[in-house]
Image 1: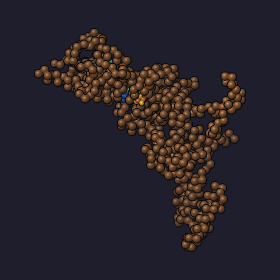
Image 2: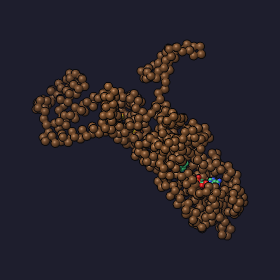
Image 3: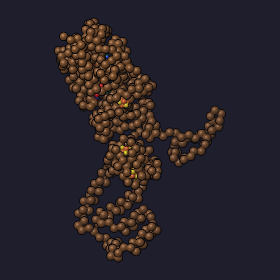
Image 4: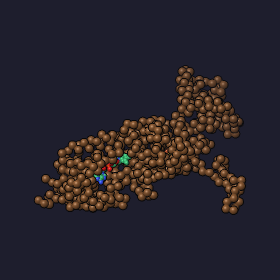
Length: 349
Length: 253
Ligand SMILES: Cc1cc2nc3c(=O)[nH]c(=O)nc-3n(C[C@H](O)[C@H](O)[C@H](O)COP(=O)(O)OP(=O)(O)OC[C@H]3O[C@@H](n4cnc5c(N)ncnc54)[C@H](O)[C@@H]3O)c2cc1C
Ligand code: SF4
Ligand code: SF4
Ligand code: SF4
């Protein structure tokens, strides 16, 4: 029987890879450092997902269940890989539990880290309780509590969503676009308007990147049906007059400074490279690309290859990704592993 | 230094120090003039809804500020300050004070609808311009425009009789807009009509001035139209909270 495949990270990408491999009769070991599987959507308590509109706990929860229940998947939670040696087809991985396992290949599905808004102090996060992140608003919605101002629990009457927080910002060394936050924010704005019809939602943007089919479903719909307002301005500062938050910036379309009162300010936080990436790079011998994500080789011969033979990568570990794309990459990496095994078997016989 | 185009600056934003010395240099009086920047400090969130409630304004919330309307606009070609794209933005975001600065030019739209054909989002900017002029009038920011007065006279007649009589329309229009009836161009037109129209037609036109012909069985239609117009007007008053405004103004007096 072939050696198991090691999958590191049980988010959408890792879950998809594990399910594909197990379905083809390939045993795998799925390790995740957290005490639950599901990755960011479950750990952060996202509400309804883009673009399916399904609740994260149902959609990703379903993916978790079918993997957790599968006899060919050995799930190890609260576990990390501490050492990784050998070569393709014959690796040994030492786990933080002390166990040592023999595996033929590894797929890194270690995902991303959420940008910590405290790194942009001028936008008030950490100073004013009513400045929150998209993750927090997702939790307010998914918990059933509804969108409220954390300071006193009141329903906000005016909400500002600031895009590109922790993305596209050379000042803090983050030049990438996090790809999904425009769409997630447009979706969130509609959810807020649905729950609180008297609450006006303003999105402050530099560019709107609701690419492809998201254009109709999110960008147009949020304006045409939900009257969400988009203002081209990068906010300079969020302060408070003691009662309301004051958002300062320049409305670039009217060339006019603005200082507008808001009840709630939401940071559309970006996707940072996983903070563990330097360790992962050292342990698995994979290169990181310039921004700090795991470097993926070109896709023409096989998908999800890294510079290290036998180590594959998928999902937000290689850069900002959507859930759908992370799942597709997880499956593609699983397929690449199976292809490689098949080729090796043919060479041997 | 004297400021050119001072008329464009709001007096409250002009700062002059009677006595001021900077690093030993006397810059008193107009030498110390500076202009405070105009800061937008709040959004009037009712504005978009109010204009959307008037005929033509329904689709204003679709606008994504591409500028196609302004670029195609007949009036913009003559006056660069005529900018439908910009006004739509001000309305959507509720920047009322900024919009009011342009109230003297907004009504200049000639309803050519070039913008309507250029707009990729079906905003119907021409309608928005109409609704905006209407809004400015209803709110008392601008007097009734001549074209509005003309429309009213025209409709009044049609509602009443089911017919339209040109001579009366023109006379009333000049009267209500305070213009002399003896306009050289009008006299010239009448002269030529007299010279060239068949006598039978002239007689009928002349008689119509005295006997006010009516469409047969019009009263039923008239009642229906008047009811509808009253309904629409009350709907607009409500949407713009005009009665509240009047009430507030009365209290202040
Ligand atoms: C606010 C917000 C809302 C979003 N909403 C949507 C949406 O609606 N639709 C959409 O398509 N996308 C959305 N996204 C993006 C989505 O979160 C990602 O596409 C998705 O989570 C990527 O999946 P992944 O499996 O690659 O990584 P992750 O979800 O990050 O999963 C990585 C897993 O690896 C584990 N791990 C990490 N490091 C280690 C390690 N060293 N050892 C062991 N385990 C490790 C983690 O615990 C985690 O379980 C959103 C993102 C944000 C920030
Ligand atoms: S997706 Fe939108 S909000 Fe996110 S980084 Fe890109 S441009 Fe900014
Ligand atoms: S209808 Fe009015 S706004 Fe539109 S192009 Fe013509 S003049 Fe300009
Ligand atoms: S053309 Fe349409 S979408 Fe473009 S700015 Fe004008 S009204 Fe807005």
